[in-house]
Length: 52
Image (tube, rainbow, N blue to C red; front, side):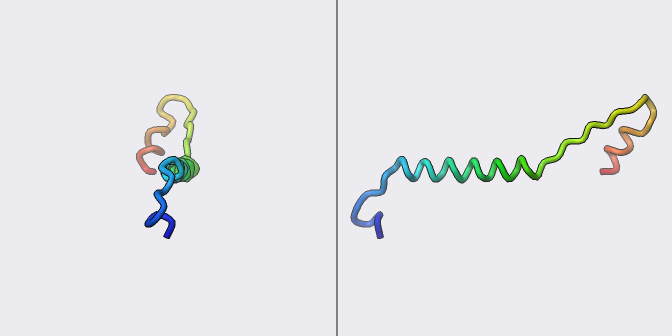
């Protein structure tokens, strides 16, 4: 009911949008994993990546 008679504060709405975007980015980064494969040549590093 706040928005119908009294205009909403645009900075609060902008802040909410930014916070939601940051939360989505945080969740996305937490679900991402990195894997460093070390080994001599011809040891199957590429094969492991292809099988993932």
